[in-house]
Image 1 (cartoon, helix red, strand yellow):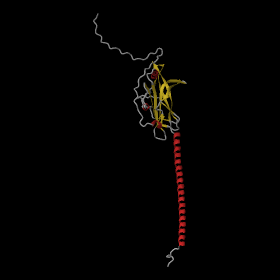
Image 2 (cartoon, rainbow, N blue to C red):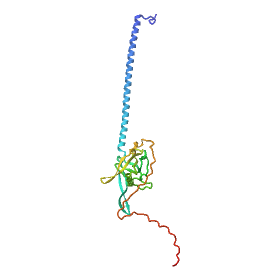
Image 3 (spheres, rainbow, N blue to C red):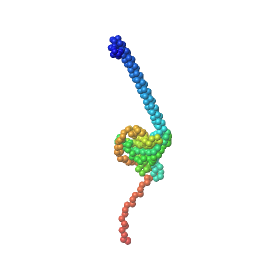
Image 4 (cartoon, rainbow, N blue to C red):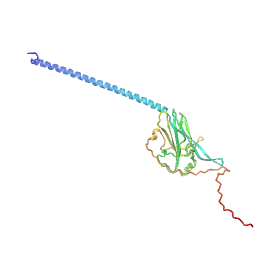
Length: 289
């Protein structure tokens, strides 16, 4: 009888079971340690990957921020710095009177940026009204754009008389209508306009808008200025001007004419057309006396 066929004694069987349990316990302990190390390794790799991704994103954002900061620091930026108000006096019989009939309005568009503003165009409008103008009136242009396009160098100005008429001539802001505001014929007077341009970095068009409500004029240190307040709309730049995708475009009231009264200097007479000679019937032959 071979040894393999001999039955195990109780003591040998118990010894075998004990050794098996010990081996199984060591195996389980080894598996547990391996699992712990696997988890720790995974967590470490995940943390490393996350930190690397965060550093990459941070670097990308920093680079983009630096580019944006450079762009905003160097790009053109056109604003309405001021406006020259030039009074116009009436001339009668080649004699200049003391009567101011209106004002040339010359906006001073300033490029506050460090690079040139290109393809510059602008329009300025005005309107007198008995009632307040409807919302969105600053989206309407009533005059012709100033000849252009032009360019404005960094830290430079562009000045050109506004209120261009359809034939290209320069109009003026009428003093007579301001007088009739004092007589309560008109209650509202507005000047509004815009300039559109591009900068050297991007092809996207840029825009600056302004709108003033006019109350009258004043003499400030020898210069004529409009007494004005900012409108509730039409004062914006770039993206802030495009908050409404389809802005309203109301119909403006028909502009009315204002009566101009001119105080003539002594001895001056207005030039009037010669009266037409009334038609006469042909003379009939007379009998000799």
